[in-house]
Amino acid sequence: MFKKTILVAALGAISAGAYAADVELYGVVDTGLKYTHEKWQEKSAAGKYTEKDQSFTMESGTNSATRFGLRGSEDLGNGLKVGFKLENGFSSDTGALGENRIFGREASVNVSGDFGTVYAGRMGILRSDTGSVGFYGAMASAFGSGWSDNIAGHTFVMADYVSRRDNVLTYVSPEFAGTTLYAQYAMGGDDKIGSENKTTADRYAAIGAKWAGGPFEVGALVDWQNKSNADVKIGQETLPRSGYSIKDAYTVNLAGSYDCGFAKTYLALQYFKDANDVAGLIPKAASIVGDKDAEQVMRLLTVTGYGVHLSTAFDALGGSWKAGIGYMDGDADLHFADTKGFNGDVKAYTASVGYEYALSKRTMVYTGMGYTQRELDVTFTNALDNSKNTVKGFDFAMGLVHRF
Image (tube, rainbow, N blue to C red; front, side, top):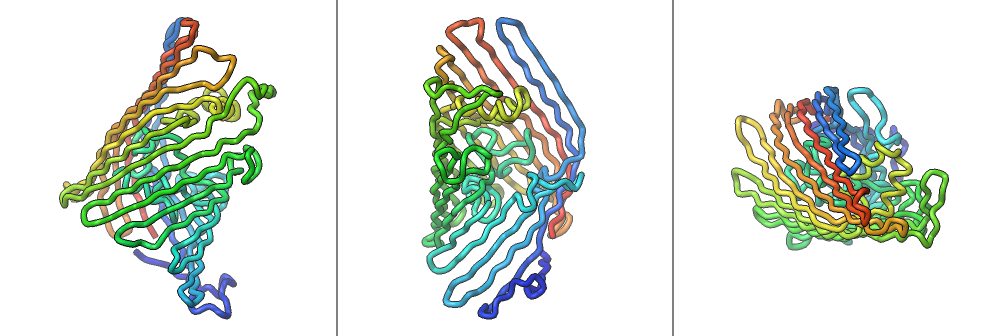
């Protein structure tokens, strides 16, 4: 892959005591077309309500996130190095800035030596497949974290997946006997709930390990979210403290892959406890009742359950094929005193297939399709309030990816 090196002196980053320094510009542009069909249905004592939507649009980043960035390092001598990574995400179909940030994908600095590497800044979580430290996602699914909403990877049937966080400290150990250890802590404050590293913020921590040997690769990870104890507000009303409780969340994750030569097979498993978001419930709820109210309500709604995803990748017809299926099952609980007799059952399903064909070392074309289904069955002591909600989605996409 071509690498464009920029003289550090031109950036004013050279140090008189440095032994060596470099800065690299890199990027990916992914532009394509996507057809989407979605159907949402609610059944209750009041009757049945159905809403459908379909679209054919130009999209950015379906297969690979469109981005550009700067990364570099400086050799300090005595086995020490300092590095940085600044990565911007944008939409190649419109030129719009991603996440309303200059460097929303990553903005980090690191120090490395015989002890390992310590990172600080905004970066991907260990459970992701993105950035400098996201190791788990790439070994959990042939689709990574997924191509689109409905051409999904393992994360669709897993809980509490947020790809990046602010104010993060991460440690990555040196590799020994094929094993690498990871630890991460995020101080919160990035979701505008509470103050950074205070009990009013959503703080996050994770530990994990990866082992690779021959055709096998195995990863394990446990993460935990210390949820904000800030007041819950619905509209202009602040709920009384005696009327609700906030439950911290954690997940236990295990993934592995086996390369038999003609195909590589992936398996990902997760157990989650008191998770707030499963199968994208927050985005769906936000589209109905508004972002702020949905986020507040979902702080009181937790789900406990499990998810499993199986996928494979193999070469055929001159290119690379991917296929995957996933399932999730969970029990929902609403921690609100005024809601008695609440029971919720959450299920999610996904099936996806994709194909990639390389035109050169830096350019490829792709196509894929996927189906997802989410179900939320809610029952109350008063059966008249019961409801069955189902969301079904289908995507067909094609596009071109160029790397530089």
